[in-house]
Image (tube, rainbow, N blue to C red):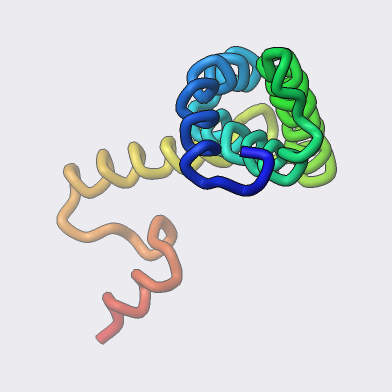
Length: 130
């Protein structure tokens, strides 16, 4: 594996992918992010394969790398959320306002044949103009 043998690295990957993925999933609780971290961890392992010792198990090192990758991803995600908070009107989020608008428009359309101009969106008003 240290010389760049892909078959040996594939064996290495298959031997340790489950515990690495389990660690990433336990920390992130996101299967897609855990899969990404699994790949990043083994890319890092491949890059430093010449430094890996053959006389000891690489699992503790792989789990430390996985843990560090998880925490850095979580910190990066939190930094993005803090710098770009979701816009809300009052105490309701954008998603809940959109859901309420769809619910209202469904109720409104079932009670009347044509919505009033005040309750339509701009693109709908153009469609009703003669």
